[in-house]
Every structure is written in C-alpha cells, then in structure tokens.
Length: 211
Image: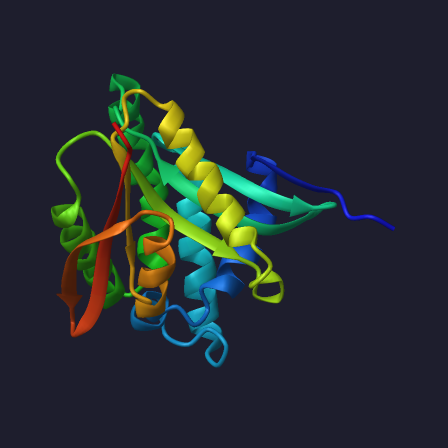
C-alpha cells in the first residue's frame, strides 16, 4: 500500500491537526519551555501551549500570513507559517480584530508569560532587515517523522515561493536551537545577529534572495 503525500495550503478546518502537531513538535523547544513550562510534565503548561498555538493559527487567517502543510494520506506531518511582505491597508484593519482574538489568550497565559512574549517580539523584530522580506514564524515536523526530509521539503517550498516573489528580498527567521543554525546555513541562510532574552540565546538568520 503506497502512501499519498502532498504539500498544500491549510484551511480553517485544519486547525485541530495543526494545534495537535505543533503542540507536540514544540513541547521541548527552548522558547516554549521558557514561556510556558514543560508541557510533558505539567498539565497547565500543556494547556498554555495549546492555547498559544491555537492563537497563532487563528492569527494567520487575520493577518498577512499563510499556513502550509505536508500531508501523508489524511495526516498532517509537517507545517509552517510565513508572514508575507507588503501588508495592505486591509491587514491594518484586521489588526483590530486581532486584538479581539488576543483577549481570551490574556486569561489563559500569565502576565509574566505575556511580558516574555513581548520581550521576544521586541528582540526579534529589532533584528529583522528593514527591506521587504518574508518572515518564517513557525516550522515543525511531527516528532515521529523527523529525519525523513520533510522539514527540508517544507523549507525548500518556502524558498521557491520567495524566489518567485518579485517584491520579496529574502526570508528572515529566528531560532533558539543552536543546532538549527547549521541546518539553515546549508540552505543559504546567514546568521545576522545572536541576541539574548533572559540569558536564552536567540539566533536571528536571513536568507538573501539571489539578484
């Protein structure tokens, strides 16, 4: 029996698949551990992680972002969220709706966590290039499917998308896993800045589009 694999844009109906996948994928991510605690050991931390990942998915449909997924049969085994350049006037109006979406999150996350999230955004966005570019917000592969080239396929898909976009000059991303730095370098990313947030290193990287 052969497996059917395909890469496609996610719809709102895919939210449960996305939340389940990314909650497991980022369970031991340094940033998530720092923000929410260990979701494998703490039930409250698990709830906080799911609430945040759910918010990130909803946000992508309100703002200038896209969610792509790698499917095997009906199972989502890899996904990424990317922010596209050149926000429109409509996106600015949708920012008002985003504030409404944020309200429930305020009651699910502690004030300290919200403060840390704000600090992280300030650190990473200050390191982003000033010219137009895509921003890779999240990328993850199911723990059971890692090491099979799925993450590389997702990243290559994004790179191809950016190469075809005449308005974008590259891709910015941030990672807290030092071992990811060399992986991204193999795809043409360079380390633009190494920042710190509460003694946690944040590696800010950029892929410059040729030409």
